[in-house]
Image (tube, rainbow, N blue to C red; front, side, top):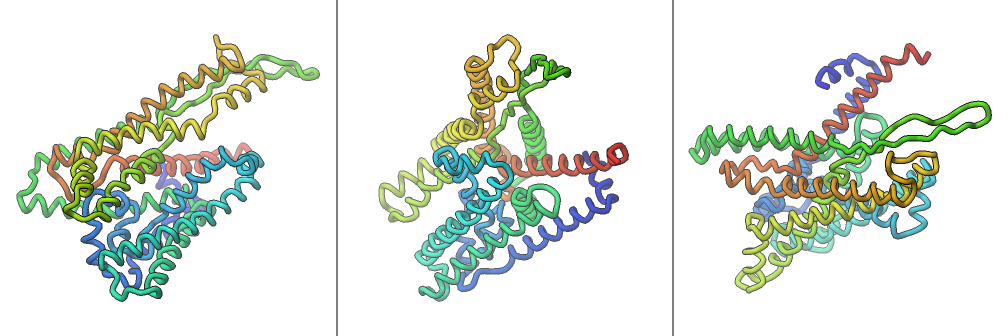
Length: 421
């Protein structure tokens, strides 16, 4: 895998794709330092200090705390995509579009763009009023509010365009690479923070060594789970069409352990932010504020248990939406296939559903452990500057693997060009 990258720069068109991708990511990093007008960045950084908003600051590459034009990052687009996937199950017209091939996918992608802009503007308005109540806006007024909201919305729209350009003219998935670049860009500053803790005597070398060992173990576990799959054997019966015989071959149906990716974590994280939001709206000495800050603090046991259970629930929920065992079993039966020892049709669907339920449980538990991991790592090592949680590692490792697989597929295609021509 590591040998593929140097080889990719030796191929002309692939080198062009890689350089274009790097240029677009450079534009993203430059935009993360352009401030939004009428905002006191220091006040915002103090308001957003803490682990609750740490993940959002990491995926935006620090733009969230600096409150630049890319402060909302690409999250409205991700939320719009998730909601649109859910609506495809509910709205028949969207379900029909999803089955119409490339043209239907283009139409759905256009709906996602429009919906993302609407969500971005609503989120920008909410953030603007929240900052106004906290006194982080220098010249409060309707004009300032509109400028801030439009600037944030335009930043998200520009990131959407960058992501689509990377997907179209570069290499890899553009949206995923933007999140990847935001996470990776935070590593140097966080390493510098660990150096300051080491120099101040807050942590020792043993703590750093323990942190490195834990990080490597987590990365290995993420790779194993991301690549892990259960292969159900499929046998196709022989059939005669005219004078030719078709079928008779064996294949398999791959069922991934982590089929939902990081989407259940995003769902659960959004819900777990409601208690903190309610606490910020209530007086500090009120019973509601004290209760929420005690039991829904990111370091409390109750918070982590509820968070992990929500992730397991949303893992089942999302996998049930994106994968229908009945449709898969029907398609296998239509083409003359069957699972050895299982009758085609409904028994095959029930068998696939049983296997998928067990895999989803394992994947959900793994995602739950990954999500609550930062609190345990901080407790074991005492390192607070390097807030690089399991969710961020999950995204980084997944995007890196997918991008390298695309590069290797391009290289493999060029190795076989001589046989094609």
